[in-house]
Image (tube, rainbow, N blue to C red):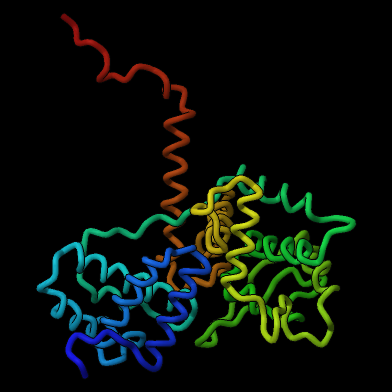
Length: 311
């Protein structure tokens, strides 16, 4: 093996490629970001002799030792890349556990997920409403079905594009989704999403295995990302604020704001660990703090520490 080589093979290579594809398709990561993440992950895979994806927490200590000569910021960046990688594997059902506790701790914090406000969601659906109805094109009918399922059911992009044609049926207000490892979950489907899917499925040939076919396979995550971005542009939403994964985050956050139970939300999102779901409580707390600061009766009153002391 050439000293300093950074490559991955076998399961690691496939897992890294899926992760980078998801970053591009769901988060709109830039080319430079993808290159940096890919380099860090392949380098880590090389250090672990191709066993990065399956590594346990104790095995990751090898990385900490190898990174010791590096600057703290570099170590933090590499550790953050691996934490996001393992979070992806857990969320996709490819791992039941997250071994990233074995990584060196750096100053990088996990960012709160991007979400859309209710007014932005309203603008999205106003654009969709203008596209639907009599005379709507097949492309627009498909777009309505896609967005209704993304925001209305919180599906992952990979789950949505690969839905079988027979997965959603009239009168069945839920989906049974099976991830790797045999884990199953119920994803709720609203009446309006059922109607949107029924309108689209009527245009899909009965012999077609996919609900959203494209060529010889199904719609790609990249294409879904492009469709969501284009819809966002029509609704006046900045490109860095919207993606398929942002709509999943909006589904979760808006349900929590409406009083949904955290355990129920965990089940609907398919999170193996409730700690993953709890990030939405931080988002909701941030919203509540902003609400108190802007709407509380004393919000505009002079602060006590701003009052001149007595002479």
